[in-house]
Amino acid sequence: MTRGIMYNFGDVVLAQVQFTNSLDVKIRPALVLFQEYGNIVVAGITSNQDMKGIPLPAKEGAYKDSVIKLNYIFTISENMVRKQLFVLTAEKKRIVRDHLMQKLS
View (cartoon, rainbow, N blue to C red):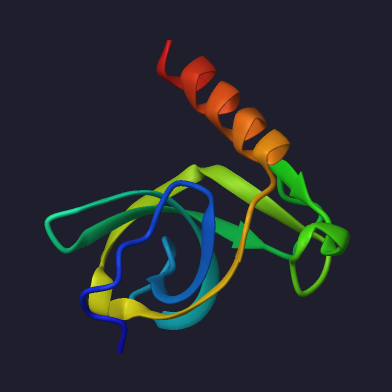
């Protein structure tokens, strides 16, 4: 467990996530948006290239070419994080931030 570790915007973690179409919980990568009071708000990441979202190629740190799904944002407990995988580049963080702001406008 990673209790007590602080995660920041742009950290990509391996965490337990629940799928929207079932009660199944699986270990999957997720993008940290922010952490507060022991909870972490994350966006899902998928390797399904047919999904819409922000491309996250393997050359930027992903296990394989993936997509950041800003339409799949949820809160997990910090003890659901298994480990940190990598950190997004400054440019990719800017792109994510811009997409989030568009969705919130």
